[in-house]
Image (cartoon, rainbow, N blue to C red; front, side, top):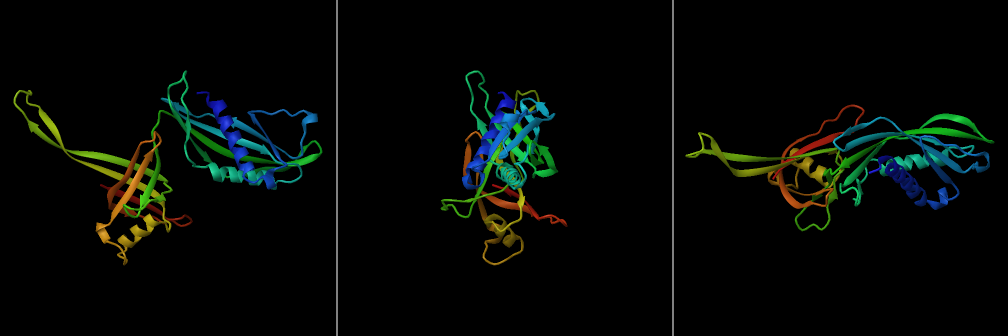
Length: 279
C-alpha cells in the first residue's frame, strides 16, 4: 500500500466531509492541500482559500505495523481566522480516535490494512502573516496514523442491560485487554518417556476495560454494586457484552461477572473506571 498517497487522500476526503456538513458556513471557502510544500502562483491567489500542508515526520515500521506521525500546517483565510480555526477544530474532534478505516485488498497486495487516527487540538502559531494583499494566521496541528497490516484489534465493545435488549451502549474505551486461560489436568501415561500428557479441563475468558467514569448504564450499575446502593442484584449481577473485531468477527451478548473495579481520581483530571470481568 502506498502509505503517503493513501494518507493524503484520507485527509482531503475528511476535510471535505467536515466542510460539506455545514455548506452555509464553509460554502464560499476552498481548501488547497499539498504534501510537504506548496507553491501558489500570483494569479491563483484566493482570499477565501485555506492552504494546508501536510509534513510527514519519522515514525516506526515494525513487521508491517506502521506509526506515521504528521504535522499539519494551515494558512487561514485572508484577514481573519475564525473559519480555518473552526475547520481544524471540527476535523480533530470528529476524526480523533474514530472508527478504524478498512483499506480494501487489491490483486497486487492480498494483505488487509486498517488505519487509526489520533489528533491534537490546533493552535495558532502566528498572526498577521502577509500574503499578497491579505494578512493570514498560521495554524499548527499534529496527528498520528496507525497503519496495521493484517491487524485484528477490538473495534467495538457494547454493553447490554438485558438479554432481550435490542440495542446497547457503546463503551468509549481508553484501554482494553482480554485474557483466556485454561486449567489443565496433567497425567503420566505409560510409554511417554516419563513425560506428562495434559488434557484441558476448564477455560476462562476475562475482559478488562478502562473508560471515563460517567453516567452511562455500565458505570452507573457498577457504582451501585460497589457502594451497595438499592436497585441492583449485588454481586450476582450479570453483564452482557458484545465484542466486535475489525475482521467482522463478533461475540454476541456474552455473559460476564464483575471481578474488580478501580476508579482513580487525580486532581485536575476526570475520574477513570478500570473494570475486569470474567465469564
